[in-house]
Image (cartoon, rainbow, N blue to C red; front, side, top):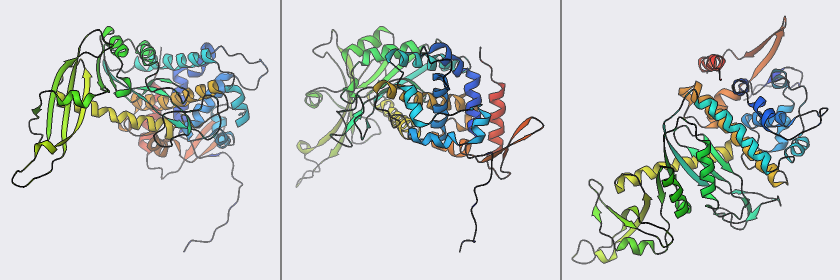
Length: 432
């Protein structure tokens, strides 16, 4: 039986998100607010309480704290400790946030993307991969209102629901989102994929010398393959062809060693709108096989599941199938952005405001990814909610004595060593 207790609301200088200080310090080291002030051309009056850079940083930190809707920013607004540490003398309400983000136009959204890219260049100057894999995918974000650009389109979970249809590209080696497009719900998955991939390549740090691109069948586009070959990139794209199964049935199949029930084939094929033939690899797996009287199997009744890819990599069909299968991890990253970092759930009635907010949420996600990648190998592979649990959602009290600020955590906090190591590592960072 629970002990009898009383509740009072009398304590001051308490926070439940003390770990935001790490992300705030890391953002400060990268100079994100200075870059926002320099690159964003949205002008507000000199007497305005908040500049656009203030709103972007405040929303990023709120998202990292776990808000899901603009109205939830009130939790950060009323956090005396965070406001004191971040020097937020004033904090906008939800209506003011919406009014500031409605100042964004398409060109301003491009400027916001350049801020993120400038931060990326600084991060990759410290640590990098020379060979990277880019995973392209689209996702559906359903809405329950009549927001601008929300349309009925591809929506496998709730058919007929209005939605947005963002396009994203992730770097598989460190999970960061390299690029994103916020799109209307009626956009087909591969709409603009060539231009999108051109922008992805423009954002690649100079230290990257080899790129592999993976994409599902929505990106089976001759123009995209032409561009990737022109850039010297390798690719593994799932095939979507009318009559594909009939084509595959006509090919010569060989049993895959040590994989009962699997067969492989490879061939060259030229689609009608292509200028040349390309290499296709395929795997088929027995899924049903009915027995008849005196025969162990009646081969005429064997059914297969087919998997086919177009690629310029030298992998065998089975190795290609396994390599493409690793792409499924990117679906987890999309869910992290959507469900852990509120991408697409913080909305106004204005399309470009929603695009800028979506980008801000993605930038918050990348900030966390970059911080862990550079400073905490142990937590590098942890999902955002796990990092939020042990690092950000930490109770603390702010005490000031003799002009010295002290953040006091519980003596029973179980991650003291990781906190201290992360704090010291971030403090030692310096970027040109």
